[in-house]
Image (cartoon, rainbow, N blue to C red):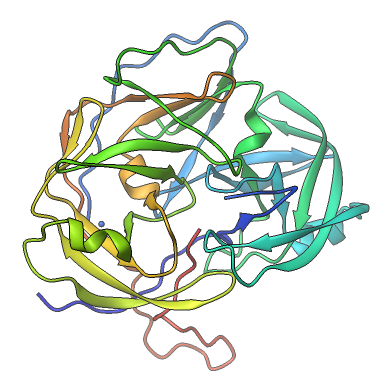
Length: 330
């Protein structure tokens, strides 16, 4: 079938280097896993999911609420938009280098201090946030919550029930059935999955889009048809072509299987990216202290189609030009 270039809506998708180190899909509505019993100390926030990406309301220094994206692919505590940093007069305390996962094209930006950040009753003090513009079509997003912010909690992104849960406790290994080990050398979770017989590592990135594979893996995989040009992607430092393909083999995570999914192939980033659309099938709990994640879902076999596109706007005002051939990659 013909493939067209497209844009994906969302906040800025960045991977950050020290001290903020880092860090594709029509889909069926996922079946709800059973509602889990929450411990008395759990904090729960309603979670809006827009184009697969999770958003929660956040109070910043007692002001708000503001809409932040929860991005497990961002390896710093937080990012705040230029407008919010200026509105709240957040003090600049340092500078940090920004990059994407290719580790190319780094540049510097200011770090600001947030005295208190409150999410559903859970309060975080002295949060360091990179002050940077958010780009993409979502102008109502004032910032990003990065993965390291939640290091002292079990973080659950419960997509089917549209809620984020912060709780105490620990996950227990189960032989990689529901619970998978992960490492986080750059502040983002990297866990194993299998593409056919090939075991690879994937960055679990709630700020990403679909299931994206690096070009270097193509020769080791089988496809139903040759990869086709799909569009152009834009990261912090570069633009590059994205290709679309349907795998001839399944993708497996623990006991869960994606049946011959559509994947996107890029030449810029070194790791597989397990993004928002495949993550949306699960309730996922991350335990940073023990470097374990748990997957819960109502179905064991799932499907992943090409990443949905935004509606094409005809006769767009000339003062608001849009390049629908580009979308940000986290």
